[in-house]
Length: 195
Image 1 (spheres, rainbow, N blue to C red):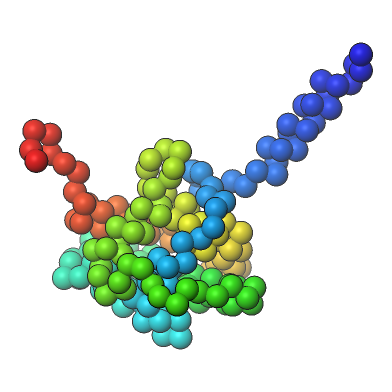
Image 2: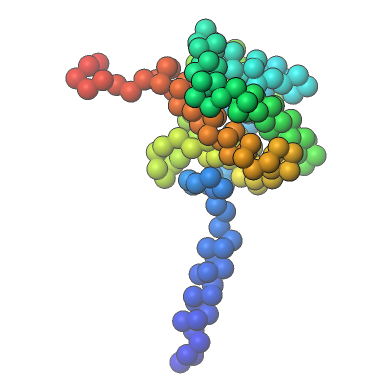
């Protein structure tokens, strides 16, 4: 009997854990194929790849509630952090598109859902971010779903280099709040005893 077998098995297990991808801000990692139809819908809703604007996207997703949502986010996080969130989101889309273009990844011919349908797009993005393991929304899981985990990780590194780690963390926090707020408007939880 090889007396080193338990140590070899332990070393293999440690290597497996070390190699497993981890979400930087917590939660599960989605290692599957990206949902590029949703990605394209998001980009088109924001004005398209050449003219993407978080403000434009926000107007589509929140509709007539966009001004109130922006006010609530500004009050909760402060004007500076909200302004940086918008800049960071613009950068995330530009950087993601640059990475996938360089890698030769082609976006699909048609988006889904309709980029003009804020409710459908919001719910599709929320679904992309609903962690299969926990059944809770996680913005990192959504980003993995939209662009793949490796691209998501590279974009986070690029955010850190351009704006700093705090801007990256704030981007995740504020985007999570936005997605929860949109889900509450478009798919409010059922009230017990009511149908």
